[in-house]
Length: 127
Image (cartoon, rainbow, N blue to C red):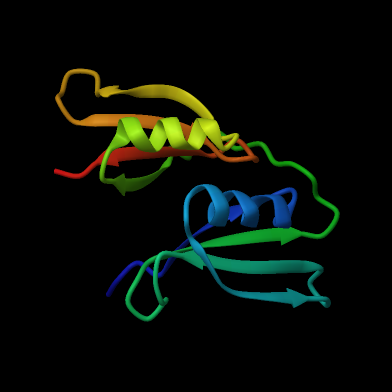
């Protein structure tokens, strides 16, 4: 068994695709409209789905926003340098909600950013 994907519902599919591809460097792997169900799926990631876990963005036609809820935590991405990655994301319009630095009660360097729909993404430094 392996994890195939994580699904997020988004209010503006193109805005989200732009965020994940241009700011976070993912590739749009595939996209398909489902007219009968009135939704579109887009799969993004850092490599082919056959060998990598990917992100599924679901756009339900006509729905512009969602309540994220209290159960969802965050998506985590490993980066070479958290300080550099956070600064680069800010310069390109990304919203940093926790500046880069050691985690609370630990030494691992982390930062948090937020995507256009309010989902949190943790940047974790390579060990």
